[in-house]
Length: 399
Image (tube, rainbow, N blue to C red; front, side, top):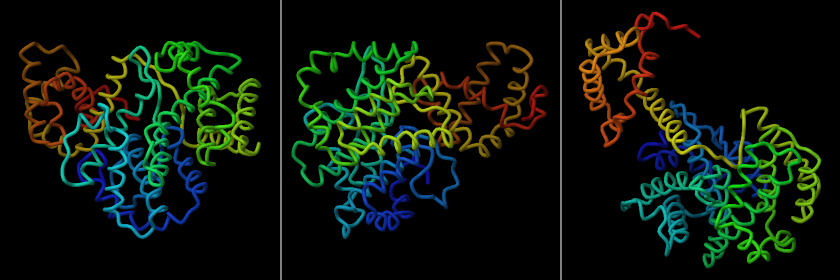
């Protein structure tokens, strides 16, 4: 199964639909803990909820996140409608996302839809991950990670019970979550430059400026926090734990803030200790670093994403690419020559033309043929030496 290609949802249902239907009998609190162990709640998904035994591809973090988002939405649907079919489930999830986007220009306006619910939903989930960092923006910089995708799951459960007012629910809940998380960030005793930058960006945001927060003061009251569901409360507490845990330390002020929040949420104190233990266990076992807020230079972000895309395409087309390269003797010769000296303009042009010819023969690499795709060719050249036999690069040191 390839979640970056069309048709992955029918394949996923073929593999796991019966498993998810049986799983729908689990209490919501048990499913939440199971989802948290995958890293989905932390915005750093490292494994799928259920093992994909027939999957031969090494999935990326984004692809695993897609799978767990769909898995969670299906769990919610089947827990409300245990006798319904997967076709009805997909239709309801599609209708839910449409209700969130109604009367505003969102990611739906960018998509062309087919008659198939599964194909529509594949496009929606892909767009949702791209837009997931767009809840709070300041100075054109997206700050939030995939950790806020669980809001979709909570909102879908609410929508199945009461479709009216779902947009207001999502807006209010996101506002509460962001407000509490930034209060957690400001509670740090020793703020690093990165923390101060995030606080500055937050305070400069027009959507979440102090005057707007005063208007919504009723949303942040302790009374409203205590009225939320257990899953909502635990999720808010986990989000605030992420906000203070990026440095792997928790000082007294941070802990006191989390204690006060736990009381406002009317959760037992054991919930806080469990939340801290869960995030500590996850980071030690599965992740080098987890962040709730990110801020990077747009150019740097684009380059990083481009490198990841090219690397993924090369790895998934490795065998075909090697075969095409070896059949193109002149290209291999020029690439080999480029490791010891600069190529002439004519030779560089030949490399470019022959690489594009190879990309035409491999459907997944047609991204290089799109307008502007040629700017990625140097990245393709960068990774090619790692594919070819060691004789191609005499200076390579084997790891």
